[in-house]
Image (cartoon, rainbow, N blue to C red; front, side, top):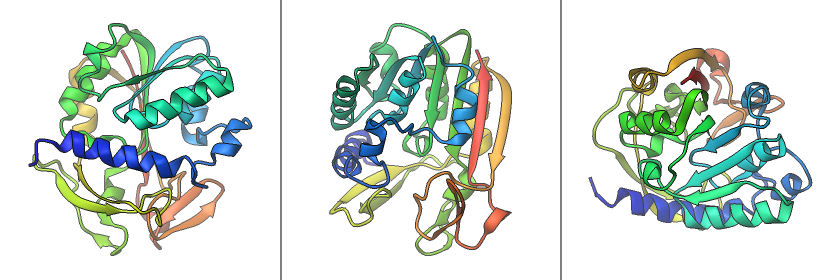
Length: 265
C-alpha cells in the first residue's frame, strides 16, 4: 500500500469540494435559504438529542450537516481532513451568522487537536470506507464522547458497497481485508461530469467489524436499524422509489442500503 494514502485521499476531497459546492446534489443555494441538509433517517433521531448540546461531527465535508445541527440549537464542532472543505464550511458559518466551529484534522489525529469531550458524536454517509482501522476510529469516538453521551451514525451498508455499481455486479469484499482498494476516480457522486481523474484508496468494513470495536470501547448499543433504500441518489444506476428514497438497480427491497447505530457512552 502507498503509505501516502491520507495525502492522496485528501487531495481528492480538496478537488471534490470545488465541484460539490456548485452541484445540484448539495443545493447550496437552497441550504443558504434555510433548507436542512439532514435526511429524515438521522433527523428524526438527532432532533431529540442535540438542542443545547455540544456536538462533534466527524468527517463533516464542507459542513452543511454541521450547520444544520447548529440551526437546531447545537453547539457544533465539525472536523474534516480537507482544508478546502473546512475553509468553505467556515465561510458558510460566517455567512449564515451561526457559531459552529470547524477544525482541520484527520480522524486519527483528532485527540491531539481537540482536548475536550462532547455530548453527541455524529458521523454519516460514506465515511467509514476512507478509514483503514476501525479499532483506532472507535478509540477516538470513545475519547471524544463525554460520559453518558450519545454516539450516532447513519452509514451506507457494506452490502451495498459490495457492488460495482457501474458494472452492476459484485466487485468488492464484504469482510475486512488489510490492503485497501486502489482506483482512479473519474467525476464525483455529486457531479459525474466533473473533470476529476485522481487516485483514491478505500477499505471494506463489515457490520461486525464496525460495531464490535465500539462495544470493545465500552459503548452500549441502544439502537441498530437497517434501511432498504438510500436517502441519496449518489451511486450509478439508482432508481427513485419515493421522496428521498433511492434503490440500486432493480433490487428493490432485497438489498440493505443504510444502517444506523446509536450508542451511549
